[in-house]
Amino acid sequence: QSVLTQPPSVSEAPRQRVTISCSGSSSNIGNNAVNWYQQLPGKAPKLLIYYDDLLPSGVSDRFSGSKSGTSASLAISGLQSEDEADYYCAAWDDSLNGLVFGGGTKLTVL
Amino acid sequence: QITLKESGPTLVKPTQTLTLTCTFSGFSLSTSGVGVGWIRQPPGKALEWLALIYWNDDKRYSPSLKSRLTITKDTSKNQVVLTMTNMDPVDTATYYCAHRLEMATNVPFDYWGQGTLVTVSS
Image (cartoon, rainbow over all chains, first blue to last red; front, top):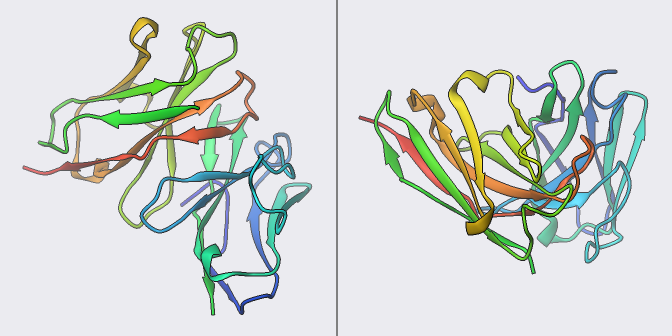
């Protein structure tokens, strides 16, 4: 069981918008930045969002991140088939003194 | 251009010690703030952080695995080595190494290696 809680799966039609939630606590999301990673099938994870809501160079602006209290969200607009992947949130946990990941969310584009 | 590549055995027996090497280019582990971490992913499961080492030899370990892990660096060879003792079949996973630009806890892993699959079986 992961310290950060994500829905196992989400699905939406092409060109629509989907959000993926990441729920934590005051020792992780509530006090530290959230980073999001995209993992395409059979590939290594790739940094998608950092410091809650910043996009690395080269990442499409269809992706956005937000945080409120002890929860964070990843939004993907204008869904494309190439967005089908697993998405992971991550944050440092002050109580555990370590980095924690969410359980991952599999996105299916219908 | 930053690249990282993991290497090591693909198969280890239970109770053996696993030694993995991360060989990188495009940055130096003697540069202030820079770090390299290890993350693993059992087949079909989530990512799990294992360990971090920084330019100044500061080391951090997953609390649940700390007793079994050792991370070291060889700056001259641009390598980071992770050892994990007493391997068990539940340790079967793809092991990734990744780059961290700064030492602060919020900093993400911005570059990842391709990963190496390690199977633990007798």
